[in-house]
Image 1: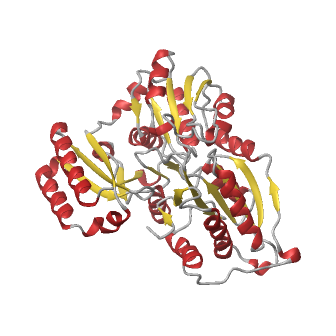
Image 2 (image 1 turned 120 degrees about the vertical axis):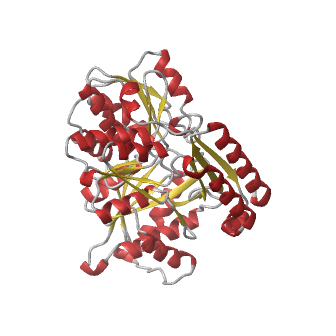
Length: 451
């Protein structure tokens, strides 16, 4: 992880860690790295944002930075992150920027940058931006007069994105009764129109953002309300998105949560049955449940595990020619239709599949067995974050747990790429044992480097 950019963009507490000054300089540096003025034309950069109170402030700073180095800006307004990834190519722009901290609480915000082909930036380009912003490796250009950038607004952005997602669906959702939890985030402006246009009867939850209620006891990180609502209202299922709608989780008609691994299993097997799964391979991460790997093996599919982060899933897909991958958290990439994880596109594909097969989500999800999994997040200090990989006691504990689990389980301990947390994850056949070992490991980490 770099000095500015984590696994999913630059992120921090808005106006404290992610300041307007920093945002302005990221805008300047991004324009320098991602655009080419050799043609004599001004570069064009899209900007989208989520519903956080701080998004307007950071948007203003980014616009100032971009225009000050001669880039023209097209504002999309509040949109899901995948909208920026899709429209940057459709609108023939040089780069796209999304202002969002995804699933984080509202006081955080972030900056995600996409190149002109709609993909998140590779590490090398992020490092170039970091060198300009932090090390002042190059001076910012200072055009004057007609060399300054201008600002326009794309009024059809939301409609263009919705039309795109609808175009990927081969079987409509007529007759389906669904609940949609928008997390009071970006999907609040798209979800009802999108799924309603596909024929579903939509029950909307958490779709009234006020600047501070994004991800607040709602969305894909807080599924309880959706689970209860689906059962109480006898609906077919429910779907939940995170703050910027690049993740999707689901709830079956009995109120059971269907996470990203289950969604991937359902969709991968369906794609394979229609000869649409490239190389009969699904790409996941080291956090994918052991049950997903067993599912792939049982169904003659290949499973590739990358580092945590949908950017690494995508890198493997592009490098080796795969077209489907994702994460347990609900980032799912249908590369035939999108260049990044797209929660609403994922939901549309899943719902279309279910309606085409006239099946219930509860029955269709039984194709994969979920291994018991314990995940504990330990908040750490800034110093602890730096020392995590060097602490000998933590290393020894992890090795001891690994030996105790043997072939019947696994332990994965890693720093979060987006928050000051160490994530302790254990899986295994013996739920009581993995809970005990997970708590022991988490407690040791708290004692050694905890905040």
